[in-house]
Image (cartoon, rainbow, N blue to C red; front, side):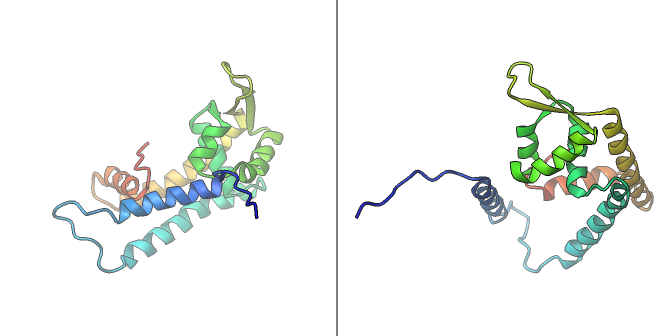
Length: 179
């Protein structure tokens, strides 16, 4: 009996599993000297992050409803506005999503003139994304609403809290990126 042995193609789902495995390996790696591993779940931090995220994105959600957009639209518009000329491939990698999940959202943002697409300079097949004036204005409006929430929170905390908060969030992120 002849078996069909085709090479396995890495799909975006298998790539996401690989990323999750790498993150788990980092989390279970030996702890630095002087730091004890978490023996108990940190429910206080887990819940605080859950509620903070819910309210933080809720501000944007309410604003986006006026445009019939959702969180996916916001994420795409945010990064295209912050990184004009971002390629579609770079956006997919940054958001860790598939072409299929980006397709509808990007089409709507393009059709409604919040984002424009241009061919790459060196490679005309490459698609580069840029915010339009309307896209930039919407991204800025959302950022100001969310920044106001941060400002209210930071007003209640000691000096240096912004840098510490950014460092904490970067440390929680697998990428460790601080903008």
